[in-house]
Length: 207
Image (cartoon, rainbow, N blue to C red; front, side):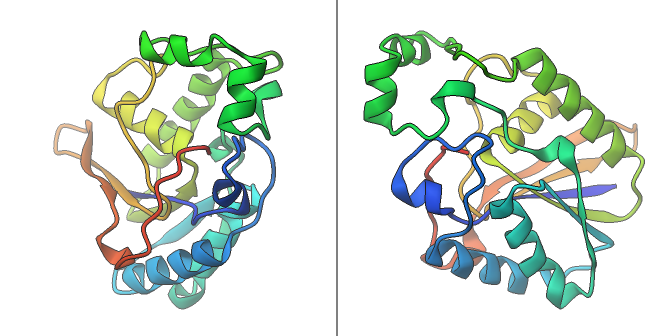
C-alpha cells in the first residue's frame, strides 16, 4: 500500500484570504498552474487510482492529475474538509473581530470551537474510515484532499492527538506520502514536498 496525499491547488478562497471549510471555491490561476505541475510530476509514477474530496478545488485538481494517467477520478466524501461552521468565509481580521478568543486559544495550544462546526470527534471518525479504506487498497493511490484533512491524517498516522493544532503544515499541491511497513504499520514517509512546483509554491493554510 502506497498512499500519495495531494492538497488541492491554491483556490480562489485561499487567494482572497478567507477560511474555506466546506465553502466550494474553484482553483485560482496559480492553483491551475500548480495542478498541472503536479500532474506532470505524478505522470512518471505508476498510479493505480485517483480519489478525491468532492469539493471543487480538490476535484478539479484531481481531474487535472488523472488525465495524463488515464484514470477515472473517484469521489471520496470522507476526504472533505472540516466543516468550520460560522467561521467559514471569514478573513483573519473578521475572525478576530467575531470570535475574539480564537488566537488566544491557538497560542495556548487549544483548538477554538465555532458555532455550527462539524466536531472533532465526528471528523476523526470519518478520517479513520478513510484510513481503513486506504489500508484495503493495493498498489498506489493518489488522494486529493485539503490542508486540515492531510494534517489530521498525518497526526493519526504518527499517533498524535488531532484535537491539538497543527504539527503538520500542508502547502497547496504538496505531496505527502504514507506507506505500510512489513509489520503492517502505517508510516509517514514524506510530508509537504513542494519540489515539483518550481517557484509556484503557496502555503495559505485555510482549507
